[in-house]
Image 1: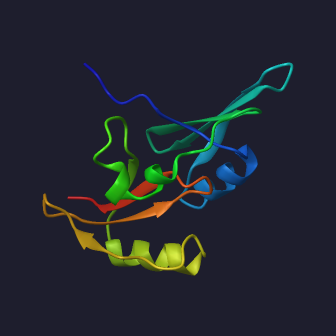
Image 2 (image 1 turned 135 degrees about the horizontal axis):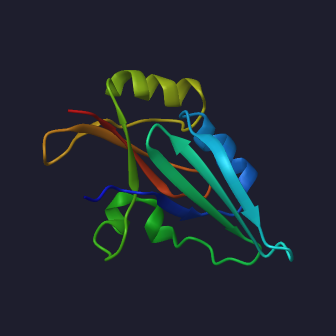
Length: 132
């Protein structure tokens, strides 16, 4: 009956964020902006996953504690979203070769899946996890 419709994030620079997420295969399919340019909304799609990007002219910075799993996970609330891959080693090479991050630390999660985290241009946590 239900499915995930979309994930929403807020960013400081919508163009920079769109370019970042396009590296993973997201494609922009819809956008809107307020007449006074106080907010822009862009919708990106990867297969059946929609990423809704909000960009407010006036915003509050992401707290430093939200930029690392060790400090973010114990705090209540939404934590991150994950992109699934067939091969975690190939995903590691992809992010390193595309200068998405400087280093990658692949871990085995408590539920037995291989994963690593990266940060988007605003420091938002994005998990890269090997599919079952």
